Image (cartoon, rainbow, N blue to C red; front, side):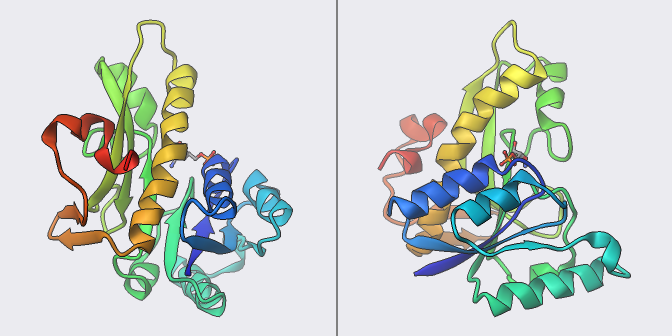
Length: 217
Ligand code: GRF
């Protein structure tokens, strides 16, 4: 079974969705380790509650980003991780980690990429007056939120939305998309072709793309 390493800095609600999906057997994978750069992050206690190794890597303890990522790689290898999932990991990762897990690092981002990459994606969508936003699970490359897109889900922007209400509505979709994307990776159904991803065994019916056909089969 595919072994996942999850990197998280915050509340870890996506981590929880992934832990739950693994526990229920709805994805053919298991969480092998959770790592955080933030002491006391809720993500770490969620891992402990699930009986998963929870590791704190405080960045202050390392002389450089490369040294930090090298330690991360060695821990991920020690836990025999096949797939790395960034779930609210608020640190840029370096080529040290990228090259050790090429095309095997996923990230979730709270917008329909390539719109609104980087920080404050929900705020950016509201500021731009978008009527639709959403979330994206993508393969991580050397850019910021630029890698090949695996799954997206659209979320309407409502007139009364604030950053908090829209982020909360997007988060509900994140919790569906992330386990589904991991499941597709675990089944070997994600084929990367340049910037594009093909999902093997999916109909690709264009009328179903907005709600992500991969989410419903
Ligand atoms: C999510 O909105 C995710 O898209 C972003 O950071 C947030 C993490 O939330 N990258 P959580 O820690 O999983 O609750």
